[in-house]
Length: 334
Image (cartoon, rainbow, N blue to C red):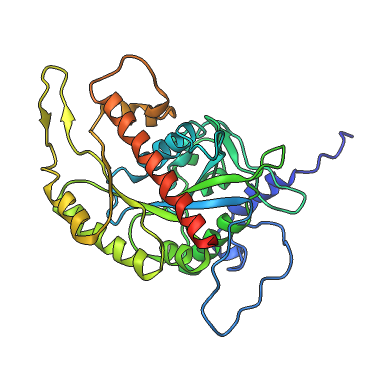
């Protein structure tokens, strides 16, 4: 008789997620082991708290979907890692994908086909997966693998989504093997102003946010709504990034404004009193790098026109983000 092989906690977790939402409690949609009683709810509004093992939190958001926010978030996170502030010469930067219905982080950082699953700590917390020296967490890591896994949807109602977001925020152990915490966690938000933004704004101590838009007025309309939402939730806005600002073709030096001039974007920055962190060119290598799981900021050497301009713009944005996020923390301690 062959020996009995017990499934690992991670295998049990993936099996749990494989079942329908009706078989999960609203209190534990990810099927994680119980980690003690829930914190008591008071009569007043919920108190914001620190994400465990994380120093600073930076949200990357957009009012409109399809503006390249997740791609920008990944490249910005790596730029933050490789453009450290003087006070933190070797920072630890992580990224959290909070898009429950359309997670794209595993694809963008090359972990989509790895067949790796997050391990569980002895306390029942999830351990991030790491590639390109960037620890990461996404609900996509917890979905069943195998053939057709990329087509597996998450079909949950609002209450399940809110609790899953809370578990991804507070039930991940971001420490490395030496016990070192993250200096900065980049949170890739889903587009819009729904449940996830509300959950983050009400429950998490957030130290900054970057809003991504494209030049079109239709994108800026929703960008302004996203800014208003963050301000209502007291989420500090570090600045705006303009994606797909212009295109540099191989045969000329004239920037082509494929999606219109940046005039409306710059006017919105001035009107709303928000810093313009940079204007990123449209570069084919960004899409190709995302498909391969190797973000463009990691690529060095010869490349298409605009690649160095994009790396430089993101590097400048990263340095400015570090400056503002750290300054905010010092101001709060003072």
